[in-house]
Length: 303
Image 1 (cartoon, rainbow, N blue to C red):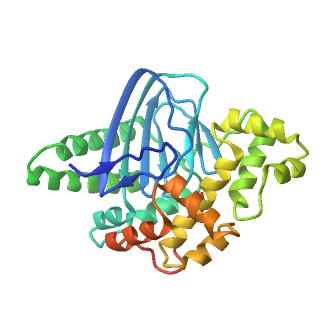
Image 2 (image 1 turned 180 degrees about the vertical axis):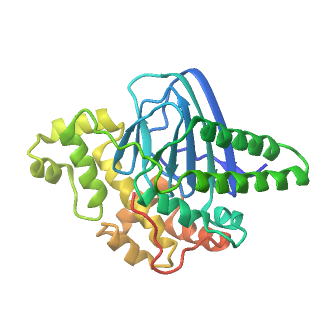
Image 3 (image 1 turned 30 degrees about the vertical axis):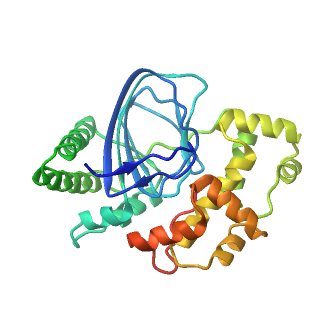
C-alpha cells in the first residue's frame, strides 16, 4: 500500500508518499479537522452531506456530485457548527512529483490541474455519468492499492493514471464552474481574504481591527466562530505555507523568514516547528532527500 502518515497536529501539513485513495460514509460525522493545508494535490468527489467548503479565499456551498481540485499549499476546511449528516465523499491525495510521473512524459497532470483551477475555480459541475465513472476508477484504484502483490500495486498506479487522464478530458475549460458564495458575514470574509493576500505584512489583531473599523474583541470572536481558527493562527498558517514553498526553491532560511513576514528568525523557527512539526532545516533536508525541490521561481500558488 502507498505509505501515508497523518500528523498529530490537526493543522499541520500531512506527508504523503506517492498517493492514497479514501472513501468516507457517515450517518453523523463530527468534522474536527479544521482549516489545514497539504503539500500534495487533493481531488475531492462529494456525494452529499457537506456544508460549506473554504479553499483559499473561495467559499463553496457543497452540492451533490461536486468535484473539487485542491492544489498544494491551499488552506481549506469545512465550515460547520454541528456534525455532518449523511456525509459521503471519495478523495485522493497525490504528491506533485508522483502526479507528474503518471503522465509518462506525454502530459503534465500538475500543469493541467493548475490550469483548470486558474481558468475559473476549484469546484466543477459534472454530468452524473462522468462523476460516477471517475468515482468508480478511484474505487478500483483503492482496492488494487490495498492488495499485497506487487503486480496489483502496479495496476493501482495505472488505474490512477487513467483517473487523471479521464479527469482532464472531462474537465475542459468550457465546463461550467459553480461560483463561490459568501460567508454569512461579509466583513469577516473581507478580513479573511485580506490576510490571505497580505500575510507577509506586519499584521496584528489591533491593525486589522483598526483597518476594518471593528472592535478587536468582536473581530477575534467572530473570525474564530466563522472560520474555526483564530486570526493569529490563520496568519501563521498562511506564512508557513508560503515558507514551505520558498524552501522548496532552495532559498536561504534567513531570506525565507524575511519574505514571509518574520522580522525575528527565532519567531520564524518557533512558528514553523509549531505548524510543521519539524524545524525549517529538517524540512529542507527532507525535501532534498525526497528530490521534491522546485526549480527557482516555481514556489507555486499562495494559500
